[in-house]
Image 1: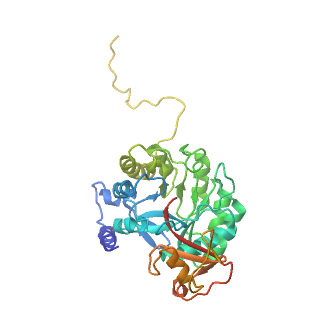
Image 2: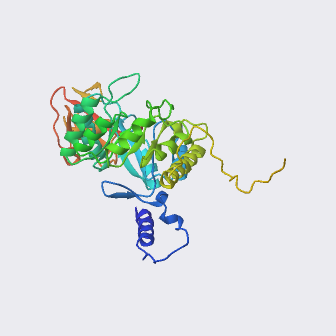
Image 3: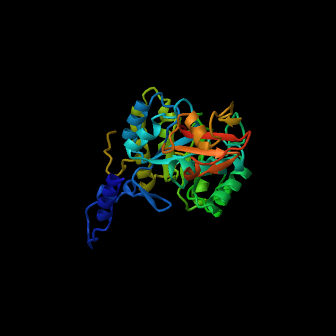
Length: 290
Length: 67
């Protein structure tokens, strides 16, 4: 915590520097959007990459991936104690200095999800919850009515709710209306690695809600994360894409750079797509060589 | 008899949550642990003394990789 606070202060000082009139040099990189802090429920995060811990072959690889990804927010699940109950996971995450984001993975009803969130609050002493209410076993797609119901109850109970949702702009707006702290639409089904199947919908969600928008699920490789950011997402959540990569540490670094690149590109403003070529070299002064 | 994480259990001594947790070798101070009894969250402060009724369903949960 102390190191993060220190970095936060440094960034704040730069942002607070007086602006000089008539400045002609290009802005320092620190003023570019990639360096803007990402704020959820008043909490400033320097990293726009959220990491899921599921699927890592070992805690050592998880720790390495956390370090290289730069993430500050990491999901955990709640399951029955087995053996002595000491998995070492919480210790590894504490040592990495990341904030825990418990999830309600595996819940199929609003009731189960609310109870799991309450248990997570007891276990991890955090009000933050990544709300998942699954409606179908094959696709793991969210159950929209149950999700909305659970979100409303949890917000009422003082939780900071980050719902995993479909890429439906109307549902995203409804989740915002009931007081969620962010919306986390899927790009494609969990663990599918199919990337963003409907970029148009992600753009529509960006227009529909002002809340932090985090692309969740479906990311397969770095270019998917970059595309999410170019579409206007504020952050990307990656789990399987990193954990199940052949080299999780290298993929963690790739995702970090992709999120930064996508954020910069979004801020830079891409050129419009055109049907035909537009010469990048002027014809003016072209030699007559006939 | 209680149902501890889905399995029938006979507690030898006192029928308390504290005894059930001892059965699982879970320390009352363990970080990242939560307990529900019959679908209700039990705050940590009540763990040692809470009396369990016959057939009580006790779920003892902890952090696992996921999400």
